[in-house]
Image (cartoon, rainbow, N blue to C red):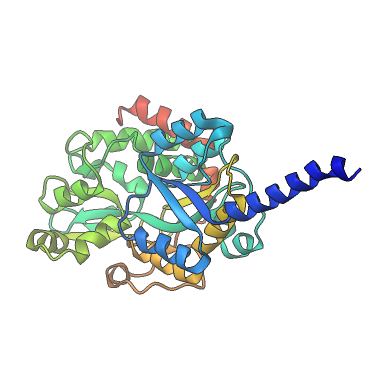
Length: 338
């Protein structure tokens, strides 16, 4: 009997050793490319002893890799920006639920889904030329379609996830028909065809190429913090508006992530996600890229963001944006917003 039991005991011991070893490392696939995140990873390792093996890449490429690796994937956690991208990962079935009272208590209900969590937020603001545009004309996203703004609107591509997430939110607040009319109105108001990133839109407004544009708040903060004379001059030429303060609030997007279904180091993955919700990580995670923490009790001292003032954010659950993202893309395509 002793001989028969020996393999079972040995297997149990090896399994226990393997489980212990698994907690010494974490394989992270991330589409966040901010140098300031380095301190986050270093602080986590210092606090837990868990080494982070990091692979960076574009969202689509990383997701394709995770999908192709399947059950053999070494990835434990996937992190990216934009709720629609997180939702896409969820739809592909790559995430797994995490049993964690820490995450359940600290992350607000509207900033998480069943299998992923937001860890920082950014707002989609309206930027206008102080000389060329009366700010009273652009208090809401819907105002970008006003006939008075013909030839004055600049944006990046309508197919970019930042704009698709905004379109998805508009559908849920205003309805599909109204959103399609809005998209057609925005296209009719273009100063030029969509191109470039959000920073390009801000600079174009400052230069007078456009009268108004939309951009994520952290791009605004970066230019405010810049010591380059041209950037300082640009920020003096533009004004910033928190849209829809009298209606449903300013649209916000997120950086976030979740544990992967085939994560070989599930305990380390849970600890890492919980660490990202800690006071220390929240302050660094957000402030490192001029964003806001999702944990309400955490405050970030950021002069650039503070200079923009307080605002009311849309409390729409970011996890539901995926329900209307595809519809937003179809609406934008029909409107010629590409």
